[in-house]
Image (cartoon, rainbow, N blue to C red; front, side, top):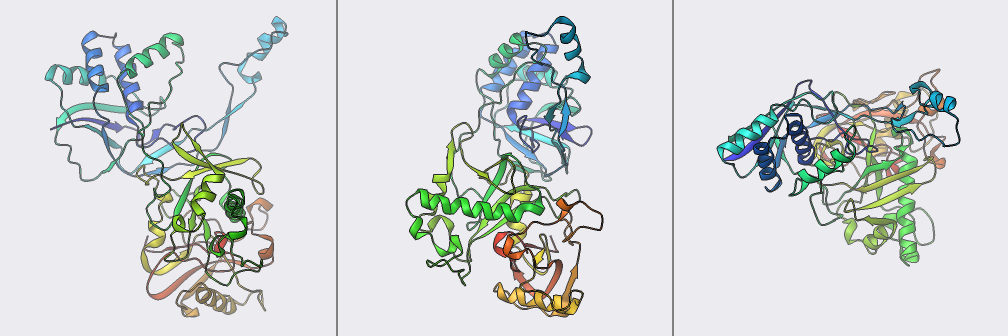
Length: 484
């Protein structure tokens, strides 16, 4: 038997952020967040001793397992709100102070409110030990008074029960943050210091050894966006190039600047472009599902088939040179700066994709399928003889498949179009009257080339990844199976 806390999000969405600056929602809700809600409900009920003892029993247990469905992150644009704790300069007179504290006179601060839309609004937290009946009853009394978890608009219904914990529609997920003995006292202290708005720090992280290998594919290294300026997908090719340059800088800083592998640099020792297949850097974006909007969640380093990045000469040392180890996050963080970024972009090796971020998983790009559609536009390998000759474009796309080491499809089995067949992916070029920033940004050598979306029928099952066209090493021409 297991102790199960069932949480139902009554509005079908969960409004909760991992941190004030984190762009993604906190899904599934972590044990420390749920425990904070339990403690808050206990305080509202009058801080009864029996219920306190039940909460202390709960914080002594091992971290619970979580069963939750996948989620789709809603678009969360920045909004600007007046701060509640505005600091007023002491030199101002009383009349000026009265004006400055009015909400419409306060300077707006950027805030983001991430929202998760789960496929199933029910979540279970499962502990391996069942308490005595009196403790279970006390926990249930507290849980019945939880009105929300996360933002106050995330209305919930919560209930403890003793059961076998077997749920078929939801997948098990490892917790990222945990409850621990003394957490109740921490929350009490935070409340007494500032009752109107307690400063609640996150619970302790689940300790794991930092590993570059934490990803779904043994050959890909997926880097998740964890902070800073998130680029638009249409600028991702330039960010991919910036990421490759950072890796090469890592080789130089590690004292291996003269021995950067062709697979990483894309150039031979004499500086000429290599003709061999080499490292591709691609954006990992939210595409291919009902609510997809194409926003960038990370970037992936894809080596040629049969090559392991971590076994390449000097790769680990080069990466660790430019990606410092963050003790607080227990992850290595690689910070990128430079065009097209106006600020800093922080990336870290993605965890094992068990927190619902399917868009960071390589799996959809690796499955076998006959029909593939471009997510990022294909850059044609040469200029067109006639700009509106669809037959010529189809032939160039077919040749691009051959140049990428793929079977050459029948040009008549290729559909070329302005718009991607993958939901959430932007068009290959903007419509008339749209602002200039809606154009795709590509490396300078490719600026004069034609960009096109395509759906390609290879007429045989083909395993990914499928990257075609002149920009395939910088994230352009990335395709997904139509079956996914």
